[in-house]
Length: 296
Image 1 (tube, rainbow, N blue to C red):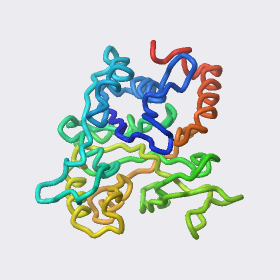
Image 2: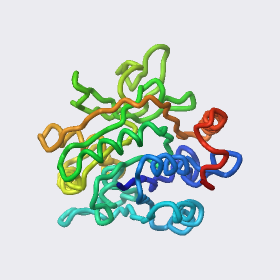
Image 3: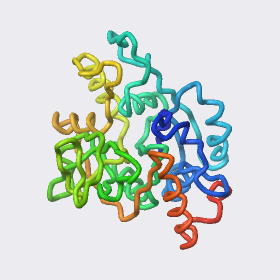
Image 4: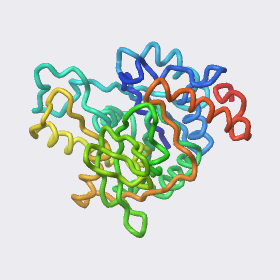
């Protein structure tokens, strides 16, 4: 099984290439823990989706740490990597979001795979759940999985966040995803503009399990997206959760939602780092992780 790690974002709110910023005193990155947990759960290949200009620093600081543990490959998210017949709007500088980022890996992934963000700590339970689901999927098509987290546990006191707010049926099958940006906590609710969101809502943190057939569906969806009018053509993004939701509505797939029993940690802002560092140190003290996952 393959783990695809979306690491092309520069983290403008954070103030730098946060994927290569150590999160522990011994120089570990969040990605170290993601790959460590994934390998323990049965994944044997990692594909990093990055910006091509970051290949040198990314490979030297992160990629080489895993080359003796799993197969490591790189895919590049490029602004110009769009379907035939489409064009890039004049003045656009940034790529097209997480949906296009995953498409960048289409030539490297031919087996069931998981997808995560580079700068999110998901916990080992997520990889175990995805490995079990993907192992059972075999050659089937369109039977996807998503790890769900409680919205309250994904918010930060240091600014606003974007989250895919999910609805599932009584059998735990995903029904819809609504992408909400600029979410902040106000008392006992989360607020996005004038919309109140219950704190116990299921949030998509871009932790998915897919089979390779999703690439054809993503390309069709991306083509349609590029053909539509958008309020801001220079910054609009093709979000992976929304793309999956469109597939759901079109009857192209099903998505099993697996609630994770682990905590989620993320570094959206520089001020988040202290909390994440302390949380990981606590997990090490509990024996969940060795003193240095990079050397294990």
